[in-house]
Amino acid sequence: MSSSRPARRSLTSLAVAGAVALTGLVAAAPADAAPTVTTRVYSFAAGPATVTRGAAITVSGSVQKLSAGAWRASAGAPVAVYFDPAGSAPNALVRTVKAATNGGYSTRFTASVTGVWSVRSAVTASLKPSALSVRRTVTVVAPRPSSTRPVSAWNCPSWAPIKGNASSHIFHRPGQRFYTRTKPEICFTTPAAAIAAGYRASKV
Image 1: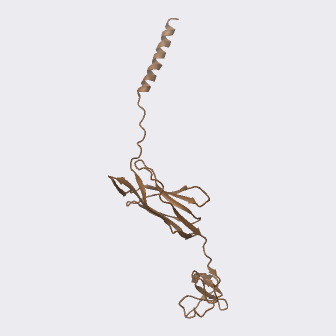
Image 2 (image 1 turned 90 degrees about the horizontal axis):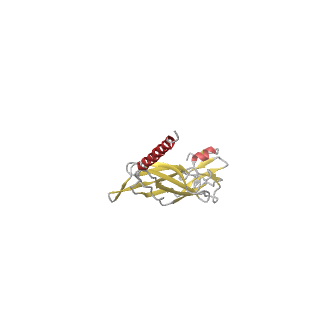
Image 3 (image 1 turned 180 degrees about the vertical axis):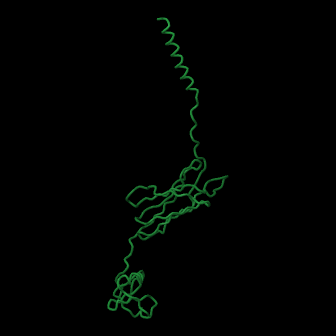
């Protein structure tokens, strides 16, 4: 019996060695192929350049791919939109949209703070990511009040041209008969703002 134990241990060792050898012969699973098609962002825009807080900012442009030596529309390509709030945070991804059949894309945001906008064609199984596009700064300003004081005895500012008469509580719009003959005590941006303040429209 003592002579058979070494033989058994030897067979076990050979079996393990054989399994290790066979494992080494099995090829590793191939990795996913890397994207091969070059892309670029084209005609990028973000604006308007100056916008009132709460209004809309539009980010638009097109994305193209290099095909047969020429740049062509990259239909359905994902486009990543980045925003960098001025002086408060690093550049960050805020939305991803898909390009239309002509390669164009457009998306809107509510203006909140001044910052820099840019986009990038995102990577897919076949498309390489583009570099970040040209950066566009959009300045966000506080909304103007609905009314203000006159700039002179006879004139309202251009952004609030409607003249309000405090004693009669009548307002006059540019072009009306008594507009140039009215000394305003208050100026309104719109007729709706004047009505909300308790004024009524002049009939002439």
